[in-house]
Length: 265
Length: 325
Image (cartoon, rainbow over all chains, first blue to last red; front, side, top):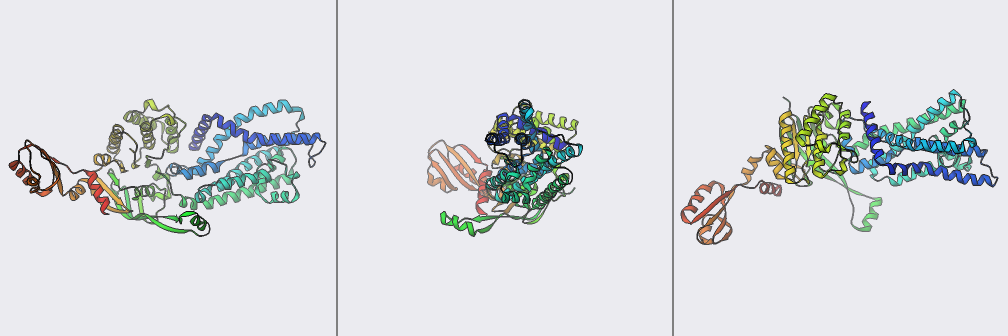
């Protein structure tokens, strides 16, 4: 365990070396929901509603999305494809350490830095928007559900991206695949629009895919829109997709390592 | 004692895609690709005892690095058996990983944006090195390699020589018993190369460590390695003492003579092949067995002012071996 804590610390120090870079990546999490919120504010001024969301709920949804994106977005596929393409994977494969653990520690290091930016943003937003927010009081079960759904969403995102990263062992270059993945997340995860406002066929597609469990489901828990059986069903959906993604990665891993050619040097 | 490294009939092939030239070839490659196996390592066998310092020689692409990568567990072999300290390297068991190290002159294991000490602390955690041992080893390495002033400077700001020293220290903190060094002196100036060599030798002697080293600098090999493995086109073409191969291939010696008075080329040619000549100076190539007899004749017949018999250059011998295979 100490190995991974040290890895986390070194990654954190590394991320802190790149203050500007970290700030720019934070904007990547921050700006889209803010832009969407401004768009919806304009629409509400025209007097149009949004699929049963009140204006207060819309503001809350996108603020929640800022938080969720900062907490849950992972880019582990980037680290993997870099390590594979440049041959840096070798330095971990020759040392007594679990390589997935190395990648996870790398993600968490950057995550902590992201939180350093999120905290003041959130404080500012709450100070400005306080009265216009509607965070409903959650009961103990819903709070536990929220914590669990956040943890599962992060793990699911990590394993989906891990699989994407493993593709780099064969494809070497995975920018295209990553772009496709991000497009699917953009549309089908609830990150840009609540799934309720999507056209029916698109919403139906979203319900078949794992992306809804990354943002949409934790957001609905946060907004107190699910409880009881629906909450449990959502959590089980997350667990099922997580298990599938983890199993796929587990199966692909030995083959990926055989494929690895330790380039360079 | 069991040998450190046993390699039996090791082969490693790479599949490469043979692209047809031109755009048409690229389009063809979209639907149908021709693959060919390249034999990077082809039926190589050798054994290295504990404490040996062995040089691994061969031209670029001969299969040296591929062999090292198999030994370090990075590549699965296509055929053959390998044991390092009794372990199968590509199973990547921690018990083996704690006992060897791989240094690639062209690949850094240090964190680029952090000072070396951070990478050292990380290695301490990864290898579970107890604090007192870690301090002792680091102090020792810092002393031998002059690291003290470098420990707290970001790696990206170090010179290549400084970085390589830090690199080597990082690789040795866990006191490995087996060292795979892939061109550890590449790009270093002669002073720095010498330092690295002295250090490798000192480490080898102090810890009875087994060292397998590749280098394109013949001085590294001459000074460090009693035994060399020479590979070419994936095959092991020589395994033995460096002097033995030099003696075997260098059946001639080069003699350089300076004269007090002009000497005719024709007259010199009776002694041996004249490689270079001007009236006051000549270079002759003579059979090794006859060298003293011919030198005596030279002194007897000509007004010799100075005479030198040159040792054969290891580089020349190795080039000859590479050329033949």
